[in-house]
Image (cartoon, rainbow, N blue to C red; front, side, top):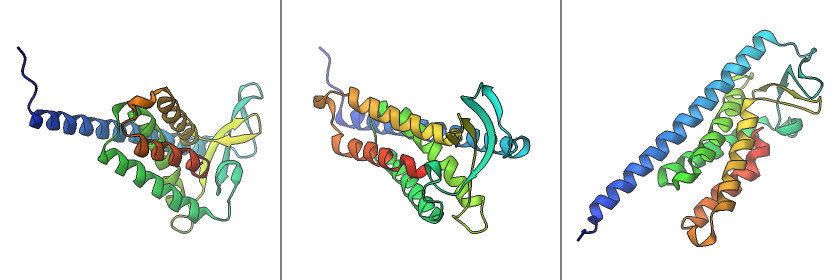
Length: 194
């Protein structure tokens, strides 16, 4: 006959799982933010704002651009508000992860965190005043929009969180309120972070 695990052992396993999740989120986020910053530095060194280098015909190319606003340059006069919103999102994602998220949300939160940090670093460091910097963009989408790796990470992170949440049956949504809040906050701020 097997004896149930002592309560202390369950608590310790839960703490270990939370630590592993936190480490995975931080490593994923850091890797994406570093890759984003390296690509932006490469773009500053090698690309021209007046010339597009085609990658896939006219659909996808590389061109240097500077964005003071959110997606499609919305809010370009309110960069400091976007910086503040990005900071709140980063702190919120880290806090929620420290408090504990189901492991299935690790990838989405980590990718979203990396994208948010990547663009936040630009806003904090690439301007005349702290928090009012420009975001370096270089991926030209058919001359409709220009983005960067952080923008892609934000979109993918929000998509992963939404997909994971949608695939979870209602009876398994133990952390429903907190997870919903994280997903809703991520979705509503994804445009602000770009």
